[in-house]
Length: 65
Image (cartoon, rainbow, N blue to C red; front, side, top):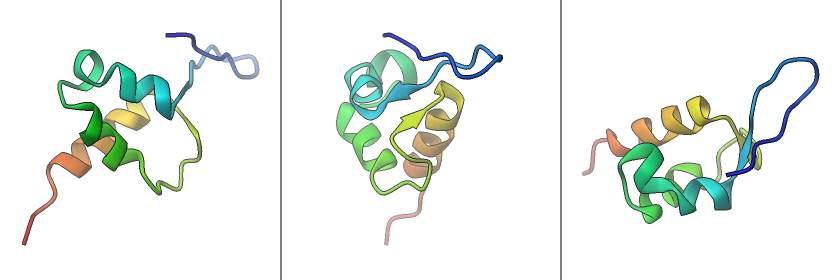
């Protein structure tokens, strides 16, 4: 996965497609789960691993009626 450095800090960000492609390795969930977690997020089109993990964890722990 190719990261993008922003400013002086070396914070790598990744596109939705990259995170979905590596869903199992990064988050231990299916690509569909990552796609659902990132869909419509206010964070934009690029995510750090930590921010994407928080969205995925939140998505996976939601109550289902």
